[in-house]
Length: 240
Image (cartoon, rainbow, N blue to C red; front, top):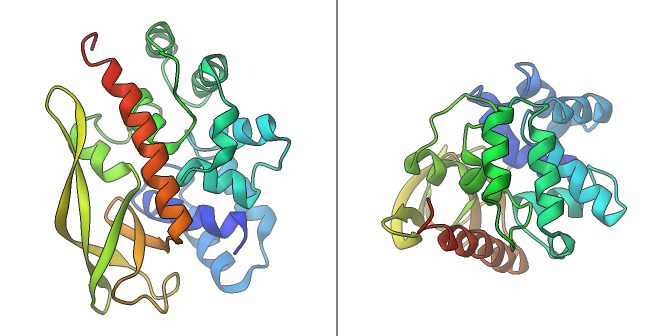
């Protein structure tokens, strides 16, 4: 699997729901999964994703890699060591980049003013701190949409024709953000992406869709970096 395919596995659902990216993205993504003959088209689609591409670009620049390198894509969606090089100034620059993609400059200014140390440019940073829907305006920023948009991990309990039953966790917020575990959910999947999915597999879940089976290392990294973002968010609880 290359970086483009990995990216498709996470971005397909949000593009299909018309939350982000160009309308023609879904068809271009499906063609790549089936034929692998339209790489340039797929890259162009990803460049048009409002909130996504600035992260790919920034992670790549910081680590001297191509924006569509597998490790770059993995770093943003799942998490890996490429994120560890980022500091507060780097994440501030990403927020500034997002103003050219739809994030209101006045809102970005407020984010930068309250930006603490410790964040990394993981997808959860965009969901929790920048705010789900803040750049695109396609969904309301609330806890339910944050939970749907963040990448959750789940264990497959049963496999149906187009759905799987998983044991997963749910994002909650009282005074602080926390995960409530051992929740059973019915999740959609596609045989094109997961033709051999089986009970016991650990899947990544995005907007109620499972597009990728996590390796043991990826699951641990996903847990590690989502916790890292969540912990920093919780330092802001008293100032929110």
